[in-house]
Length: 302
Image (cartoon, rainbow, N blue to C red; front, side, top):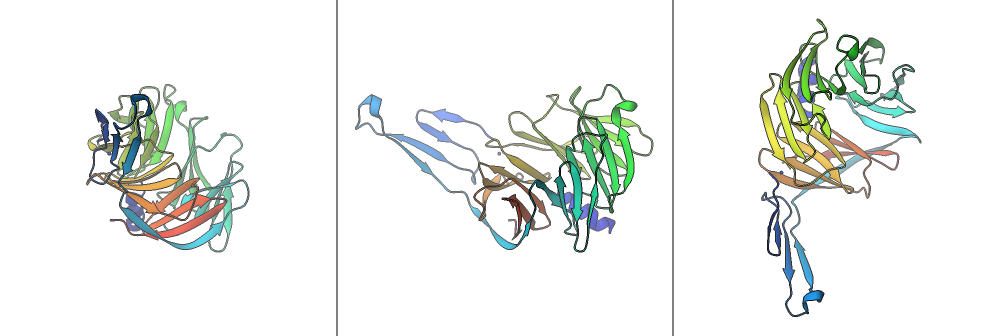
């Protein structure tokens, strides 16, 4: 079972330069959009005709497998490797399986900021406002509650995620460091320092930690702090999920893209949705949340 969990967690969890020469704008990357602006000289200078030619991105087809409705005020979080659904409702975490629904709520910890589903046998909940995290069993029973600042008062945790050997990833907004925290010894050690104190986005797998800086540069490190990826996106994003050091999904303006960072190739996902509130990918299954419905797709990545 642990091998399955590690395999799933590995699944969970462009160089972009603007070269403006006269009237042509080009975006690097053979699979990225190329925009050429042409100016007609047949009109007066103040009435120039601008024509834009956009080369479409290669497409990835998504096959709809089914739809699961959620009620009003229920927000989709994700799915685990057993296809159980996790969602929140009024700050309550709920898990819906085939035969039952369980829930967890803490009145003392404030707003739930993040749910880590990498290990469904030990879920991690991060309460950023209270600088605390909670570990839950698969039945959503409370295993541990810990305020990071009790022992380390100077820390400002902006992200907490599960890692290996009873350790956690912690991004410290106080000084921009990435720390590994041991649940057994309750000790920490810093493995990396970011240039900025706080990133736009954080993500992690069991073996890797990722962040996206204010310039949309994706960086990733391993458990020893060694950089394993540095990739410049060609745009901003609305939602994003980094699967591993070489692959990610993101949405922008209700369109969804898949990027192979290693090959510097970008694809557009063909979907039926006109709007995308959130999404979650796990083992060839892509779940899109929109209009209080979870639409489940089967996709084959290139």
